[in-house]
Image (cartoon, rainbow, N blue to C red; front, top):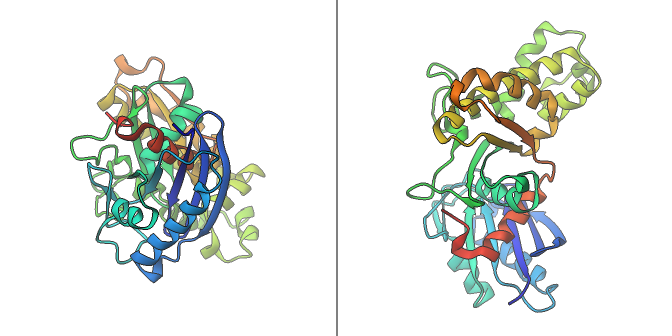
Length: 322
């Protein structure tokens, strides 16, 4: 059997693909624009082209192709339903469409946060733990439950939507319409909006200079840059976000009795500016009997963890789940 698989990270803006060796990790990686505005079939064609290019680099072929996708994924891991930022995708059997292009090759599709969790479990910060909660902080807030080094998917495949757990039933609405959902605080656009509001009280903040006075350009990466320079406003805004994160993670730990958390995604690049406040807040929201050995770890592999996890789907097939 081949030791190679192809991992695909399907995003609304970019498509990423990697040829992955089972033991050695990423061998080759490439990226192209998704061109989602051209419609589903165009995107499928682009995925197929990337996958075909990647598998040409495998000395003895590949065991299959794994895909991390936003949106709801059916139990059979073939069909994507209403993924955000992919217009025209209602319910699409992505696995079948790709097999029409690529021939007799196994294609497995999974939620992008679940894929990141699987990648972390075998290649990243989660390797030291057989069970952990994965949270991805980016455009939205994603979640995964890794139990016994496998993805826990719930009864239909939709488990671990941590971004849509509420911390305040009268709080701001997330894009899903859930009041006070953590995504309504920590999703990239929501966090940036909060920062702009807070800056009214910090006219001397470095953030004003970093965006040349145009606060519409403010984003979490710039918040981190300013915090790293000792900017008080940026540090406080990120600490506010970290406290909210600690709150929702407490609820997740109380529910699951899984006491290790791995945090990834683009916003997590702020590191301890977010994670230390989360670590400080977390015990306050966990019942006393579950507080022992509670910990939060940063996933430092960035986008590579999703590509590695997608390839791991192909290596494990249907076994990559509980």
